Length: 65
Image (tube, rainbow, N blue to C red; front, top):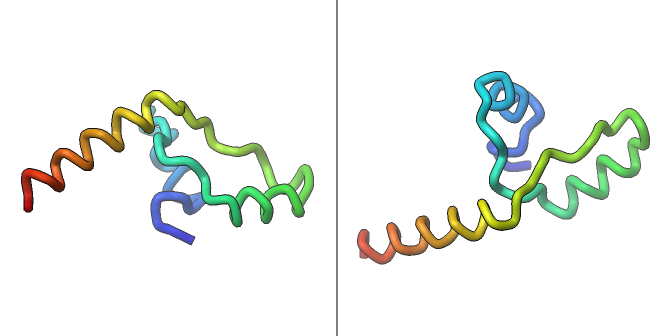
């Protein structure tokens, strides 16, 4: 599990009004589905926001090189 996808971190971010931009990994989706209704719902994911974040991150890494 990665740090940005832990339940505690996502809860903290939601309380601060910060929306998750990174999609949930497929293994976590499967785990949540196996738990049924106890697994909760998946975090919101906006594909357009993710594309923008990815573009900014790639360009920033180019500049760092």
